[in-house]
Image (cartoon, rainbow, N blue to C red; front, side, top):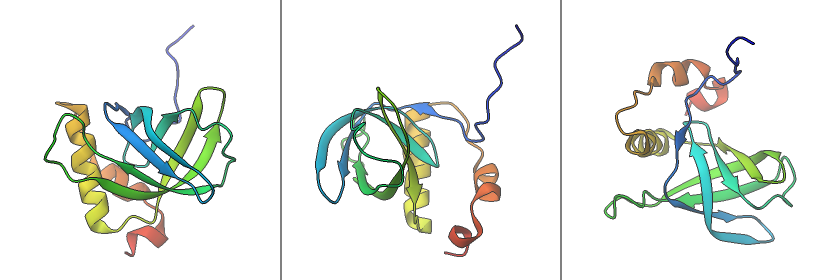
Length: 128
């Protein structure tokens, strides 16, 4: 069998910090995440949250104590027995820039193509 193909447009990097998920009816604190990209994050647990549910996502780089906590709106786009995939929503330019730096720090020497992300950004977000 040939190599596995993927639909992913944005590279995921291993996430080493903790995540707080603040849903309207419940908070999940100090969750583990498997990976992060410029468009979303995969978090272990919380499977009872339904697709389309909105939340606030708060995280910071555990390897950099001086980094500021990032707060991003998110939406559950997929759930299974392991956890939930969250898509980042409503980012302004400063939040995106902070997220980009955060992901670069998580990736180490891995290069991230910002232009590729910006080309794929929905029109309503690129106007911000």
